[in-house]
Image (cartoon, rainbow, N blue to C red):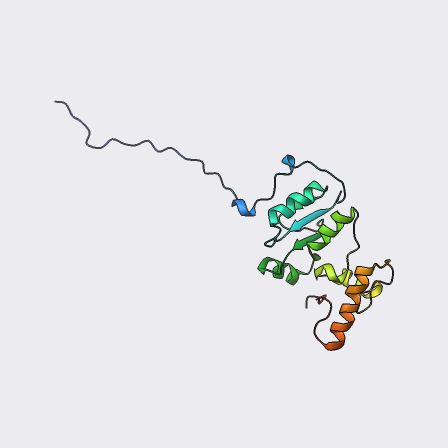
Length: 179
């Protein structure tokens, strides 16, 4: 008698699945980006978001080109977080209160002047208590620095702030401190 099995047993093979992070949450591959200028040498940044004119990825690539390292989540070694807008991730960092969050305009100003520009309230989305204390010591309520040399464009910004505060329209960005 020829017995033919009705069902063949399949051999189970364990498949290895590779856990990956979605492309949009991966940082840039710094090994593929050539450093053109050591402007941000020894600084670590965390880029939170971009906007319509400059994407998060473009900002990260630009910062690496100018010598900095980029992380996807700030640590105690991170110089600051950079953002274009105050999105959910940025608000969560503000609640923690352990990293300065600056507008990417500061990065662009540093690159255009080829030097590290002093951080001032006009660049800040959030300032840590230590940074706020420095600002309160070095800058008046209109954003005019007691220590840095001024320029005509900066004076125009200061005069605009004086006018806006006088009319009650607007004031310098709030330098909030977490409760």
